Image 1 (cartoon, one colour):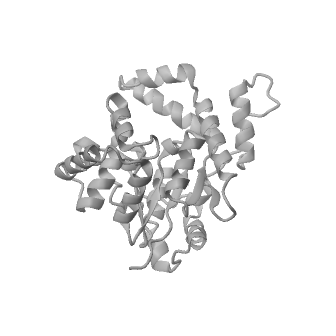
Image 2 (cartoon, rainbow, N blue to C red):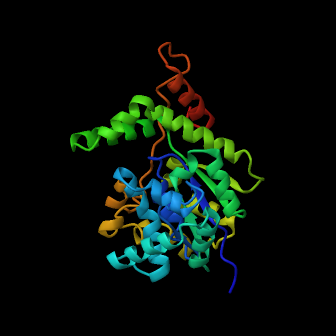
Image 3 (cartoon, helix red, strand yellow):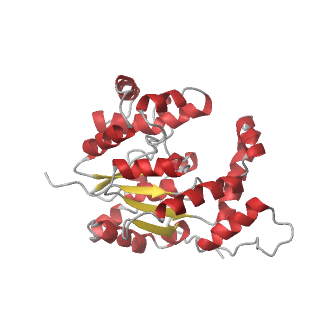
Length: 301
């Protein structure tokens, strides 16, 4: 059996098109786009599972459960999700390296596309990804920082309207949306600077979605995948990804909720507006000042 393509790891903040782009790249015939497995968040599967015991954290179990259910049993049902949880409980001692390599072996001969946002929180977590998949390619997807902040604020407002936003509001008391953008973006940039030439690529998400065929070909060339017309056409249909639907009751999510509600690629251009904030603004606080600097560095002037 030929070797599987190298893993493609998508890095980015939340609200930056990573779900749709993950599923688009994962629709290449030689690849499979996974939901957020979060397997690099802790040293072992047991520690990870204990972290995701209650409240909103339980939602973060869905990606790994759905991945194992599909790769083990070829389906995502109540029964296969239950079997996946039993597998995790019986392998609590497994390290993130063992878990990651198990998933790549199950997916072979296809390569995997993985996009756990939690991996981008700390540099040590990103180093775990590199340890488990030393030949991986890292694709940093960015979005206009003001658009990310506005999207996060809208999400909080919608949750509050539904009576489910108390936890999010408590978080913003200590950690504003601009703080979130700064921490994750800085961590990703620090990590990307450590990679050997050719192992990392940065693409503005707006550019990818505006000309997806062009950027899909570039990504395929970068990692050595076929660029024939049939492969590129397949990548235009993220809705055909097996995880681009609401999952069973015990594992409904795993990808962005807004993406799962409408997992298609529209093909419409995504405009990049100039930054409204400026370093010359007298009332700019330190968090937003840092956000402007990072945004400028990533091509949002």
